[in-house]
Length: 367
Image (cartoon, rainbow, N blue to C red; front, side):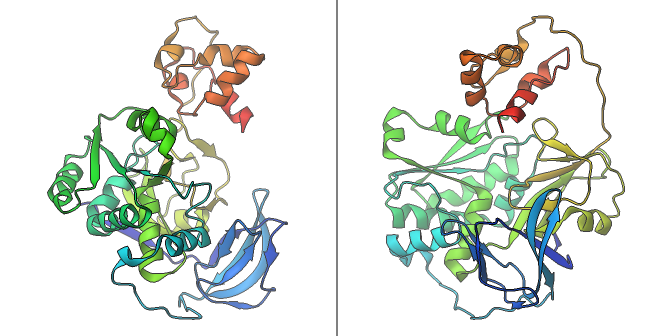
């Protein structure tokens, strides 16, 4: 079983700040873990550590609240652990998940639940590792969501790549008859949210409304329902050809990447966030690891020469959403804009392109 390594010792934690937030504390105030620091009525920013609020800092053109971590994780109010998480009412469950930003833009009457154990980024090992280490917690939480929200159909998707993970789930799902395990062969795009939803649902199911969560989301929800505390940690794959082996690390959301690299004595600057295929390279180690960071790859950077398009058609043939990446790249008209909106940034087109054209650059322009 893959073990999870902890890196929870950053001296400073960086939490997102926006000028439209109402701020409930001032500089030099002592902050307890789970305290609501700021909100705009829709986003709620909670402290995931206890310590001193130092103020607001800018890191790579983004603004953050900075908290000096005292490593005590003090809570202002200690709440008891809820033994049976299935006993929440639907209203209480939804209010609690909204409070902690885990029920945004979801139809409360949705009847289909999709839980993804498939990473969107190639070569990540986070989700299989979480399934092996937290099997009961994950299945209990999914079962509670099904019961409380009156879910009619629940799909739990994983790949066949990790046979140990498959065996563990098959051995445990007998007591969770409402969870339908779906196995997929590994490919470059199946982990994409919208592609996976399309694979798992038909027209009738889509009309019922769909709730989509990843394994990481499910573990956050488990802690919310069990302990009523803010999700404070993130699980990240740390890998690459400059490391001896891949590992999953548990960090506090808002950790500075530079602290992590110093801890592991990593001095190489060829660092890629969220996959080598469809992620991005960073040139500054002063980078904040928030909940959107799923993996860090420390790799030798390969440089390729770019050539003119040879009209081979591989990009169109390999596209999982059936658009023409070459047309999208070379044109700027209504049709190319439609393609751009459908693009899911999987990176396959650029990966297969023999001319090494920056086809993903169009998607980045969209963002």
